Length: 185
Image (cartoon, rainbow, N blue to C red):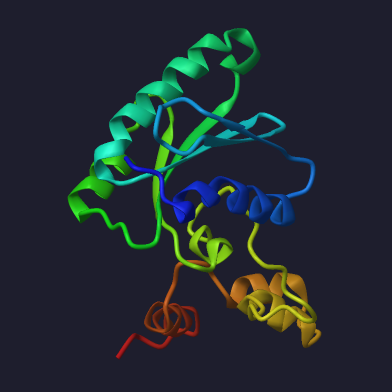
């Protein structure tokens, strides 16, 4: 891979985004493959995430180099929850087959393929270990049916009998008809 100015700037830009999004994180750059941008390593608690940059052809050498680097760390990294995130810079795309092959490979660590755009933070939102934006104000998620009844001063026992998890209106109607002595009809 020939390093362009944009590709060369990605590790620093990614570190800035990750540093803003997550507190108490150790971010570092590790050059592992000649003529490729350095990997960005994010360490926090028990987790280790490695971010690599390139196209489809660069994946195998970068992933292999990361595994060797990981093994060289020995016991200090042995108990870490490891993820390898392969970032495709804007302008480079990968086939669906490539992305699927990478992400379903469970050997060694979890793997993700991310298409980077101008908004790097937005590009990373599909990663399960990154925090979602905080909701300001009241929650937008509606109350459960039981919680709604309890908020209307219905006793907890009655609310739990009225709202039975995993049942639909038809099932509840038939149960009511059976309990009242009226046959379902």
